[in-house]
Length: 309
Image (tube, rainbow, N blue to C red; front, top):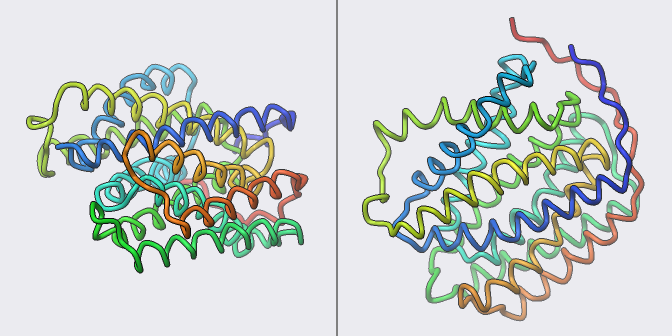
């Protein structure tokens, strides 16, 4: 088993978290553009893992990724393949503002729940308040999407459900990086290469495709953003922030994304912000700011994990 990684400076963790916020804000906008194009969610996942898999294959080999097979599959599934499929499916049905709140507001809730149940890592009082604000914002979005659906997204509830599953998967990814002390380079190269190996053959042989009907601009945009910025830069930065700040604080920082995503969706996607959605944005953003003031906690005892043979 790889020894525990050295402690990282807290300020570097916040820089990494800011990088994730920037990447995920763009991810919500670019993915929604892909969801409104001729591309299917399966196409977007294929572009993501084809590009990231090719780029990271030499790194995977040269850096000698030491993750055992079971851990490699768990990291690749939670932070890569399954997360991407659920997230891209959500963008077919729901606006980008919903993704910002359900995914980025849901990751802190999922992280806290998993850490509490698995590691007995009980949140502090201030963290409870931060999580409560984020939870209220997510609940308000649910009321908004079910009660006043936008004409362009009448099945937003289906997208919100996909986003909720994606949030839980990403929360699991952050927690696994923390518990197993996974090097960020191992996490990113493992996700990219393993997801490409598992997914691309299935996509090529069995899954519906819309590449032939999509414009080359749409294909290039999704391949570049999803394959490099979302799959590599954001995943690496989140792993680094998790190891530096702790999974709870790092995930709470992501709650800032709903505000930036919703604001950018107005001019770029022509998606208006309702009063309830706007209030939800304010609540989760304030919750993130409150969570950033919390010091990194020492996790409870880590459950024993068997190494794969």
